[in-house]
Length: 187
Image (cartoon, rainbow, N blue to C red; front, side, top):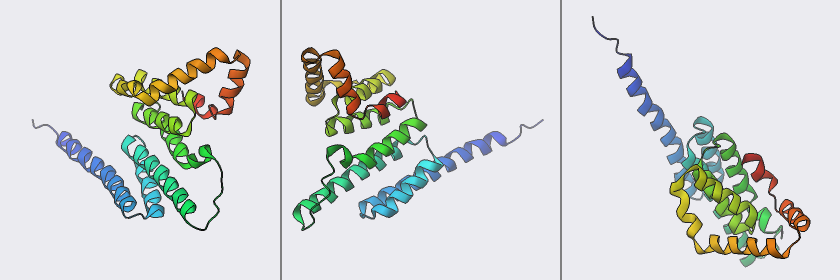
């Protein structure tokens, strides 16, 4: 008696599904490269909605948002626009929101944790950055080289020094000020 052909069908369906994921992601990247940011945002939204476990899409989308905001700020500085002056943390708000949503849907993703940790490090949120980077290494030891970066080691030393010179209650209040609530919800 012959075996049903469903096994062959399953093998064919999986690459087709992966191809669809790849197509949405590739389309988003193409739009980003042509600086069609609104179109790229929509394409990344479709890519992450159709494949919420596609970590590359989440990280790429966040990178696009960060670069778009940095470019916008540069244009404000060189142009006649006075700018909003909304501060360093607000500068990364869209990027942070994308990474937070990605991590909520993929709580075991070391790559999203690492990307968010590096963003927080750039934004000056040392405690949040180190918590996320250390979480990424606990999740996937292959991420451990980031902990040896000079910038990360300097942040660790600064936080350690801050703990030594700052009473516990003041330190706790300061940590709560640096937007750590979003990190602790996901960690």
